[in-house]
Image 1 (cartoon, rainbow, N blue to C red):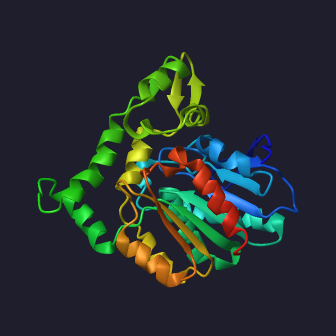
Image 2: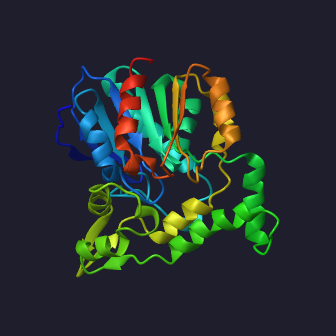
Length: 304
């Protein structure tokens, strides 16, 4: 597929500007909008999305507090992911208004959970969903995680410690670096970035840092990212019963954040949907096997 260069744009939204990147502003092509994971940004997925620009008019949005979006992001005011849902509805509305028809939504991790909530709240905007490792946690587990915050010494449910450690480790993350090269040296081959294909880390850095004086800083503040990880009030699984469009679900076979209960509910909602577990992949499936996801995005176009 022939690749087309993206453009960086901003859209005014109440308390600031929403940043997004766009490929192929062609009214004849179907619309596809992508939502990133917590702590990432739209440009991180450039190698995933750009090869699809011959087949889709693509937009990828920087969520509130991420990338170069300039809307208010106060950690103390982050209670649940509804704020991401509402922001996304606004941007999808604008895209659909331009296209004159519903669009396909894709999302990774938090982005996957958020686009499900958009499809449930506004089915008129969405023609199909490509869910990549969406965060789907049963309500009981959500309540136990909340309990774990009050009683962190609990050893009854080991997953509580894991879930809470994501937020705690984020708070310790370094935010300032003397150069982008130092950021890459600090991240490459470590932690979440261990299994990424070449190029994704560079795009993540370019899409999520800015020059401030003598330093490059992460545009997603660690406190906002940690607050997002800690916001367990949301329950994306409740949205599933209201989804009315074709569904494609792609999971890693190592440490998936998509519960089996969530998978069963999605299959019930779309018996003809595509549900795949990809071998030798983790929660960072888009950075490990982008070609598999590209193929499934192209396929769902024929089902909507």
